[in-house]
Image 1: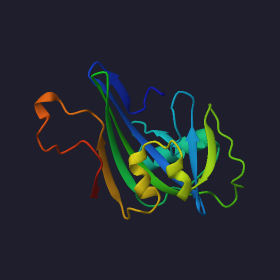
Image 2: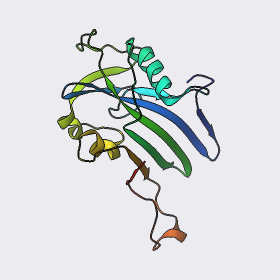
Image 3: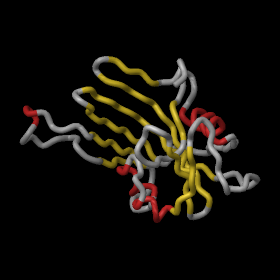
Image 4: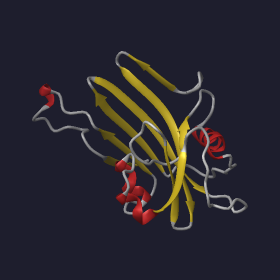
Amino acid sequence: MEANDIDWSGPQGSFKLRAAGVVSDGERVLVCAVDGIDGWFLPGGRVRFGEDSAAGLRRELWEELGVRVSVDGGPLLVAEGIRDAGGVIHQEVCFYYPVAWPERVPPEPVTGRDGNRFRWVRFDDLAGLPFLPPEILGVLTGRVGGLRHVCFDRRAPRPAERGKSPDHGGMTGRRA
């Protein structure tokens, strides 16, 4: 983590602003894993103060892969994740952009930097991976189309909220 990353924590919880790429090569998508996170996810990282999310994604992919990519157009998906870990709220907002693998760079093998491990996976095989966050699989596999805003809240309802009709508690998809 860099000092100017939009990422902070305190006694009430933590917040991260991220950007990630749906880096594709035909029918395949690039996924990433790192030590300490139990699963595969789309490559990217934290956005820094003063940088927009697309610029943050370009920088992160250069840092992680050593590959310069272009991020053209708007995000495919905006996802908000909220989880509770022992009474502490953790919240993350991530912008997911479509990114084509540069034609001038052979896609095999993909070697990461800074402990990142990468592999290509067919879009159709993503559901068979321990993929994070699983709530976005429908968008990635084409079952849900168009720009989506996905908000998921993994907190358990508080006792006073039980029996109420919650406005959270699962995935909600809204067109942006």
